[in-house]
Image (cartoon, rainbow, N blue to C red; front, side, top):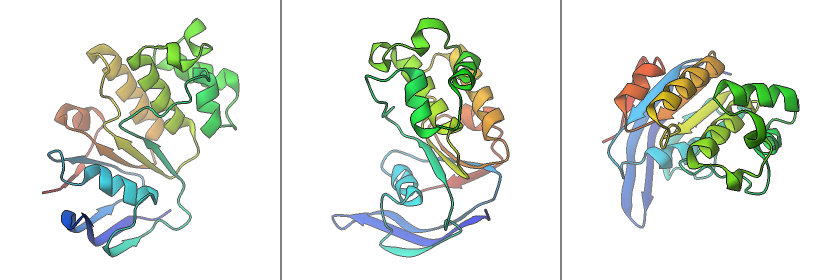
Length: 193
């Protein structure tokens, strides 16, 4: 994988511009942070990087053959599957034991790893969604407000685990909380206006 380069990316919906001539580089193996007010195109940019949207104009280089994994603002879990089952959907190469160990590292152990995720609390589901993205094979990890809804102690634990597991991968972290950028060791920050 190489650096991902965005040059003059524009996107509008119904004639209303959301992204205007955005140029940026996501350096290979680095965690890049992005903070901006609501409605400035953060999620749209992630959707473009995932291939779910196409820019109206501009150039995007470095994504050919890149495996992308993502944590969306919504958990997007399969309600009737267990935590282990949800994670193994995107990470079939991981054994159930390895998945249980990863779940334990973020405070999920015992019965909660095997019961349907629809029976878990919001914070538990959030941790499953994060691990589902982290344990999948990927080159580029996109995180759209991944730590929302977690209490402060759990958030600290999950951020440390995420930073450890994402080391060496290219990551784009979108958040409204500057302390998350610091905890994740973000050196490069993108700004949308």
